[in-house]
Image (tube, rainbow, N blue to C red; front, side, top):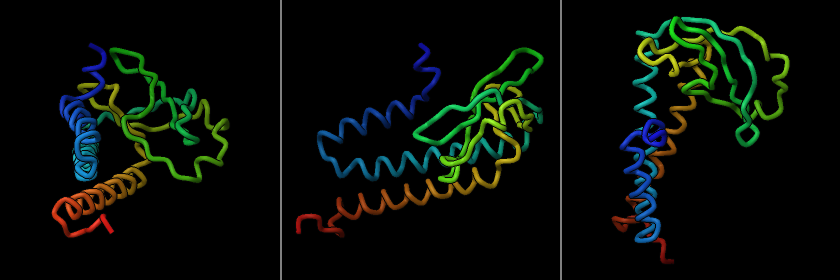
Length: 162
């Protein structure tokens, strides 16, 4: 049951379709992956709009960092009236420079965050707005390229047999 809480129904449907077309007709995976990327970007843009409008500004402390292929995502701890939360932000964008930086000096540092009043586990760092938008725009453009290439091959505009 924890699996269904972590993933939305549309994410599971996209995954099943993606796996099916990997074995049936691989080129369909390109527009499918591109549309999934665009769908997630729109979902995150709507979340950012919602949290900027309705989010509760709060402060938390960086307790550690999670490694993800060299990139570091901060684990933030903060208290609400109802619960203690200690996890990574809902949306975080890293750059290649983050691979080379030392983050040990930031542990214990207080950061400003915005959390969803209905679900405090969904939060973002308040001062990372511009980098998040840049990352989302980049993912959106990559999704558009995947859709164009996939549809170009499927419709015969791009010939891959030569």
